[in-house]
Image (cartoon, rainbow, N blue to C red; front, side, top):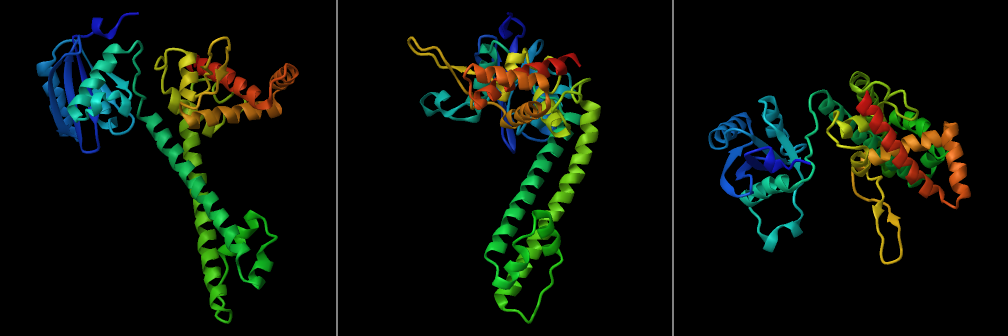
Length: 346
């Protein structure tokens, strides 16, 4: 495999923050040539690009930290101007030798990390995929608001005055929301009755509003997913609009991930070797994109409930002594492999 040092003359590491980015130019051996800080706006991005064109002409690559967060702006600007951009991970504290920490040091470290990497990570695409990510994230937050409001409403029922509690205690969640959202103040009742009524009404209306917002966001998300999903992805059993959105945001585009094993590692479903001495075993991976991991679990549980082949696999593995949790982990690995190939081929 050809190393990065054989493909470029300069590597520009970028340490990204909210208000400023610091870029450091390194040669093919990782030696620092110069560095520059600029604000995180279009003028700052343009100044850094001109600076790089002048001091690092010819073959160059930008190694950006956090290209999906603080580095999203500079990454988007560089890609639009035809620059080669790769993504590097932010350093852990233990990687900072002797506690050294500065923007210049971190920018140079980003460049050296790119030079030493065997495989370079491409930034996720923006545009429609960024729209999917934003809608997906907002929908999830809205669902959490709804769920929290329902829990609060049920807690209010438990501690409500006796007469009010008797009217509401046997209602379902849907009936409780509908009833509490139209409750009126009763001046003839005690002050705690009136306060509880107002709290219930406010909480129920917040839950109903969040539910309506979530439905609207999901409708918009469905339209985008249908237009952006590779052929065949949404036809897979267990893959709907929400799960499809998670898969698309993680996968992004063809050839971003070099293999299905890399996709499995990204999803946290690749077993981690934990052998010692004469014991050979693997343990569950706790790393990776947990939302993607949850999406794969949704696919697995759907197939366990309705897919004959998956049911047969479950029966066979149970006979081998595997627990249901172990079987589900194996299935997530298989599903990750299959869906990655579907997206790459589509």
